[in-house]
View 1: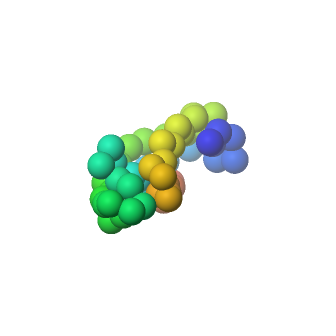
View 2 (view 1 turned 90 degrees about the vertical axis):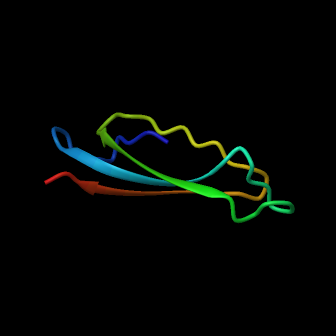
Length: 63
């Protein structure tokens, strides 16, 4: 996902809620991890999703 929609010159904190290597919809559906980082306009987020899995991001401006 390209983060071109973010405001130019603003730094953002991002929290990822994402599948792990052990995640699988039938055998381990609740395996996920939470990690944090920093992003800005133009960055690209590459999400890897397990079968039946998902990916969520919470992006907020750094103050």
